[in-house]
Image 1 (cartoon, rainbow, N blue to C red):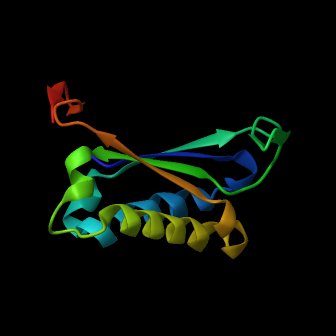
Image 2 (image 1 turned 90 degrees about the horizontal axis):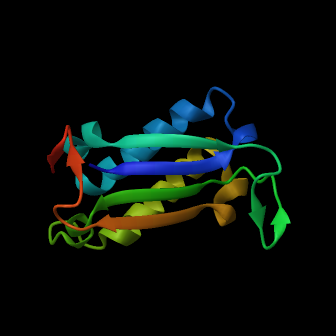
Length: 127
């Protein structure tokens, strides 16, 4: 199951950005793996209070999020999805920029996390 964890300044979450980020990140997975996978996408938006985020040793209130996508390891190496990691990073960044604006592009960070087979589950069962 594709799972996004997004750490973002609370100031950027304005009641409209949430829906746009959730839809945009879900669509980013669909653009790489196909629409049939979008119903599996989970998105957690975690607001960071003012003064509780730092870059380069200094507090910052920047709006650009730190996005982590967790997927099964094999999903990044599917032969029917060439260059999946690069395509995901690009699609995720475009989704964020589409909601928060071009000014955040250079600050968006994307991490792809790989879960080995047999180390995830849904409903109490190994997936």
